[in-house]
Length: 331
Image (cartoon, rainbow, N blue to C red; front, side, top):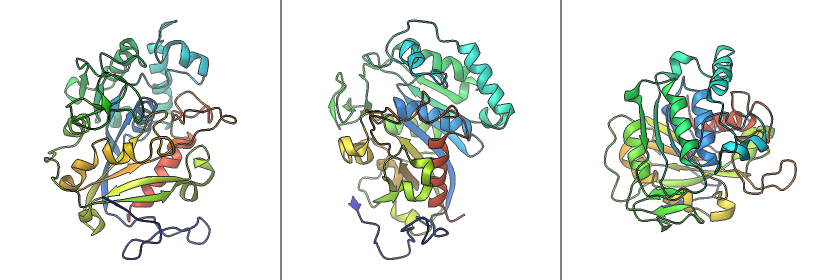
């Protein structure tokens, strides 16, 4: 797998700055449909993003996360019943009312569009960071939106709090950087099989390239709480103009590239399927900050550290990632 700087010459057009080349896309790719995935805070973000844009984001794979809008724009609420303890009950009915209100206002996709989604959930029995009750509530939330055939919940595997893989990362019963679990379980593959139609076996050898993308130059102030640079894996076929799908994968807290290098980007498992299935994989990146906002673990915003719209279409990070996705497409 190769990583090239932004000065790569050829048929790819790169936006070197938001002012000098505002109309030039980052990559001129032919992308036709989108799915998302995420771990922990990235799981919360994947669910938020998919509900917000279910008109074009057709599926989500969510590992170790709770219901959308669980924190209700309050960090204390998040700590109270959205992570590793349930001090007070999660008000699922209240959360659902808010989401339905947003949908009616156009701040989420329509209920009809959401009902066309496919959602794959995973929670490990050894996960001590997200309780089973929290994960179960996310499953219950989706049961109110989707037919049973479009919803899968894996909850019987002895996984700790991490992204389970076939052979990458640390022991399956431990949760430590880079938060990949050597579990002899292909979570990325199982997820993609459910949310993407007719998934082919992974390629035996990679032909694609990991490119850096300038997040803040593309999305401007909307990406102020994100890292300057993100990454995208592009199979050779997609780079040459073949019609491809886009998969956006959100890392977890303390799993951004500044903390774990390219571990999540290269080893989470999604790239293995990209070449054989014509999938471009976008890996947006957050950044750690101690003040304004207080986000020392570089989590995605699922409790409101950007603003009160963090979980709908007006959310800064959601808007920023939309711009990143749009920048990759020639259409």
